[in-house]
Length: 170
View 1 (cartoon, rainbow, N blue to C red):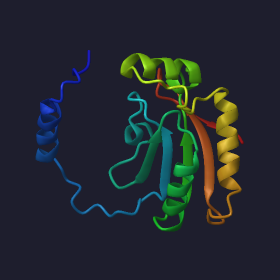
View 2: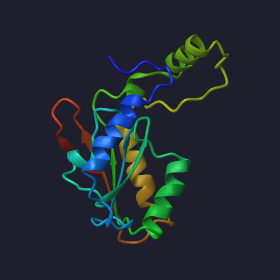
View 3: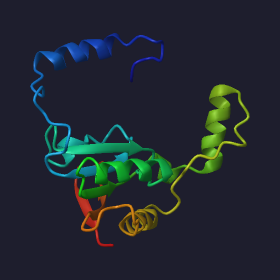
View 4: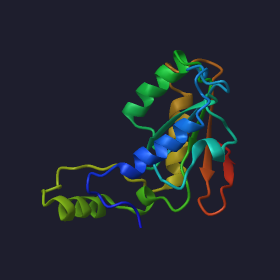
């Protein structure tokens, strides 16, 4: 069971002390060494650098519910591509995704139950057809005129049960 939501971050502070003791990233440049940007889900079962065999400084990582391309993500991807040398973009949702299993109604109901607030005007972005959404997102980014020519945009599916990444032909 996870930490209770009581405002106590002592476990996080203790973990940071251990991290700082072994930290060796002082000289890491801000531009990704592998010219890679990963858009993936916020799911806690995905450890991006480990899954992709990357190290600190190798890539930029963006996350949201369902690894979905949306207007905010597109804006940041354009910056990453044009300013931060991210010439390879990987969009990687995953198996057993909560956003792919949820419905707008189920998310609204959870919000209402947890907060007591009417969520009927809340429009969460759920994923109805995961592979089709991935294909549409990859094609949308590939055809975006604000993405540099010769940028490689790829889709992949991460399996949370095995760690395997399957690159999807689009």
